[in-house]
Each structure stands twice: as C-alpha cells, then as structure tokens.
Image (tube, rainbow, N blue to C red):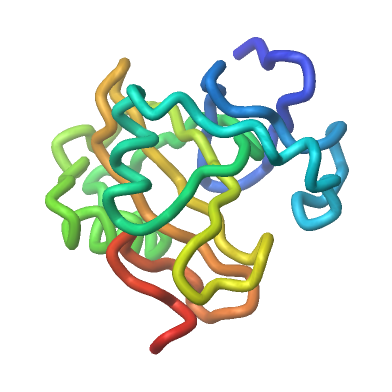
Length: 156
C-alpha cells in the first residue's frame, strides 16, 4: 500500500487510509497532541459522508492522523480488539461482520467534541471501498479505550 506524503503507518491491528479533505497531522512521528493549532485549523469538507457521520454523533474531525488496513479475522469477533470494534460499530447501526476474512481500509481522525480533552480522542472509520462499514472511538487514557461514536467517554 502506498502512503501519501505526511501519512503515518501504524503497526496496530488496523489498516488506515487517507482522505484529501482533512489536513494531516505533523510530520511522521509527531504526536497528534503536539500538532500546532494552525495545522489543525483547516475544516473538513462537510459534504463528505464520513464527516457527516462524525459530526452527526457530536465529533468534529480535525485532521487525519493515520491510514492503514485491517485484516479481519474469521469470525470477525475472533480477536478481542475486533470484537470491541464491532460492538461499538453496531451501537450506531454499522455491522462489518459480513467482511470477516477480508482486508479493509481504516482511516484514523483526530477529533474534538463533547467533554474530551484536546488530542485525547481518535475516531476510526472502517471502509469497504467508499462505504463506511464500521466506526469507533479510541481514547488514550481509558481502558479498554474503545467506544461507540455516540458515547462521550469522559462522561462515563
């Protein structure tokens, strides 16, 4: 998979891909929380389905942090991580279990909203082609740190 300039490839059980409507965070290796505010200031194109999805659940996408791909196990709930991703996705009506055994694209966004401290929440969108088939939040200082988009992790 070819990465665009400025994209960060993560060694996670995710595979993340880029979107041209949001700015990327700083250079590879720059922690998202240290990105200058000016770099995060450009707003997303509100016509994009993924931006509408995030905003519809109270999250404002700031920038794309990473892109990669996720090889789903068979069944999709075989790993605890993918089981939690699926549960969080199902809470907002997305079910990616039918893609078990396939490699899907994942885009990670830095988001802000609700009561979350700046830079602490990331939204992960799972794609089959152009369609968003899964979505969840990850939070740095929470365990297990995986939440549905419709949850404010800091109000629990």
